[in-house]
Every structure is written in C-alpha cells, then in structure tokens.
Image (tube, rainbow, N blue to C red):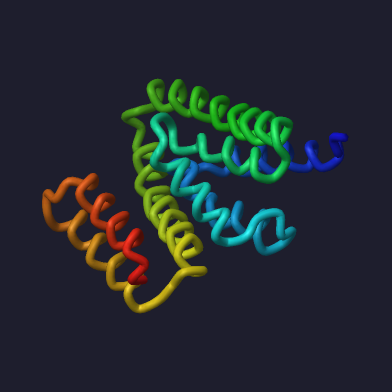
Length: 175
C-alpha cells in the first residue's frame, strides 16, 4: 500500500531542491543527504554515496541520480516523485534563464551576477563533495581526493583514468 503523504513529501522536497540547483544538481547533494540520511534515516550514508556514484557514472544529466534515490526510498512512486519534482523547476528555471540570458547577455549587471554566482556554485560543489566522503573519510581517502583534485586542475590527465584508478583502489579494499 502506498503512503501518499510520504510520496507528496518527497515530491515537494525534490521540487525544492530542483529549484536550488545553481551550477548543476551536484550543488544540492549535501542538503539531499541531510534530508534522506541524517534527518529521516531513509537511507544509510553508504547507500546514499553508492546511489550518487551510480547516478554520476550513468549517461545523461547528473540529476538523474534522483531516480535511483527515489527508487531506494519509495519504489516506483518514489521515482516518479523524485524525477518529476526535480525536473519541473529545473527545466522551468533553465528555460527562463536561457531566454533571459540571451536577451540581456551583454548587460553589465548580468555579467556581474554571473561572476558573483560562480563562487557560490563552487562552494556548493565543494560542500557536496565533503558530505559524500565524510562517512568514509580517512587519511588515505583524503590523500586520494587531494591528489585527484590537483591532477585534474593542473594537468591534462583524463578523468576516466582517475576513475579507473579510484575504482581499482576501492576494489582492493585497502582503504
């Protein structure tokens, strides 16, 4: 039997998060993790991190990880609530911003707004990354994260090789 109050609650939470996706869905992972893992205990930290990893590795937009999270939390109706709840504001805001940005693309206030928004998006991405590794944080994980960040930032190492290396290290069970 479906708990419709719970499905509506999920829909509203994912709608709220979809409206806050400045810089992509990864920016709201920290709040999503707080809601699903810490506040309500719908998922464990490991389940949440695994769902995010699978969602990020899957082809398509990175916000499709909400499908996996919706399924884990509430099955088929959880998928519908999470996906539709996320997509409506995300798509609406993207279309509006795109049209608005094209019309006013050379205005100084819009350029200033974009420059001001960049640090916010970067900080949200960093906080999401911290939330994802905080449950598994150790010196080894911190070192791998730091080295990977420097390699991506300062070299032309292809991301796929870092993902393969990280997967191989994880598969060994060393960390």
